Image (cartoon, rainbow, N blue to C red):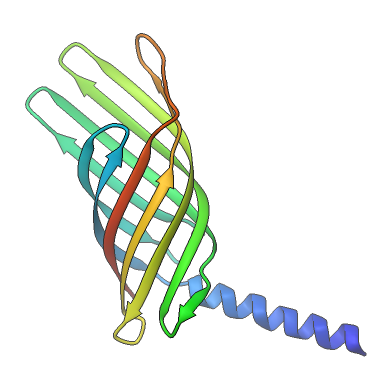
Length: 159
């Protein structure tokens, strides 16, 4: 009998967690990449059908164009108090840079931690996060950057 009750309670907990993350969010973030001295901004979004939170950025300059993307899977988002919480997770990052006489493709893993607060009945989220993102750049020559720490602040609207 106790095993059945525990199984039902576990199912409710899992279903409740899935519903909490099963929303669509869209927003923007600004940040800085320590180790690369690169400021920037990105569009951030979470689609209901996918488990990851994404960010996409593009920089178009007179001599160089780059596009980057991250996909972060939040392992947990526990509450500290009320609607204020923190989260941690893992993810992947990719980037493509093309210049006049150069090009590079970067890929890396991410370990991230952040804090967020939801306002207006969970419609608006503000967050700050940092990630350790060792990246390998396929270029001439191949370059490995172990110290790449993107730090971002942003907001998302949830629907």
